[in-house]
Image: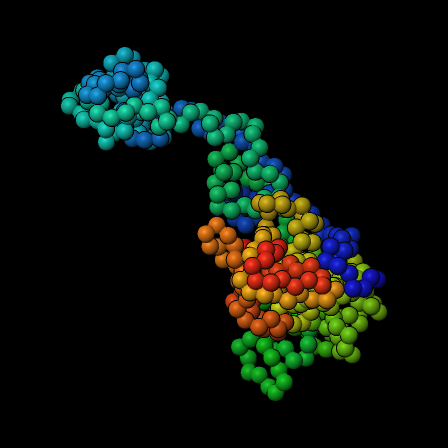
Length: 401
């Protein structure tokens, strides 16, 4: 077991026991929020044929060099309709948005720029080739446009459908169990007795797990009993991973640490982070287990920087288009921020954009028990160990998505 590891080392160690990457095929209707497991190539050209981007008239540009040109209307081209007639010199064809471009036509005149009298149309505006959507200008058959590891958003789903995919091969959502520990914890909504507090960490962690493309299996909190903790961990070992909250520090009743040392396999304990110093990682009955701190801020911060990275790398998510909780940015500080001796400092900050620059400041106190600070702020500093930062300096930060 290693102790007091850096964030990079913690990620490296945890990836020695990655999530298992499995795949399944699902209908397009069920694809929202899933992640592609293979690159998707287009089965068709897009557009499949030259078509109009406007309602108007399909014409020959050479017939419309002078204002007030009068052309004879020879028919209509409708989306999904029969093949339109060929446009010859001195002719025009009515055309609807998305309808095929008639043979012989090479430009579109908007309907607003025309005036119809019987079988003739007066051209009072420009004939534009830019109003034609040319065949395969967006996609061509065989072109890969959705890489592997991409989160299927509404736009990505539309693209998959446009390419002709009624089914998509996706990464199976791993089941991740979540367990908070402590005698003092009570389900929100119940009456509190002296010394009790509401349990909230498991709900927050479940939300983060789901945001990372996994299935959260939230368990009610376990009391400070080795027998109960052992029984509960055993019952959760069927999951692909386990995340606990609380019980990982150095106290007598920090039972997650104790049971992992004595009965599990512990790979590392404690990280050089502030907040979030006492996490652990190992396996229980062969199942990867992260032990996160019980302080609400520490628990969420460690998930953001450690667990989310482990999930992403295990499942081979796309670096830019896969599920992610934050992005790394550079911000200019509007107030001084103090670092931490020997530790990567993750201060909560509020990031905003002003005149093309990202600015950051703090709004509440930074106590690791102050969960309100995670709502009042939308990012974290990435201050290297043994470094402070003054107002006006540019530093690296994580900006929540």
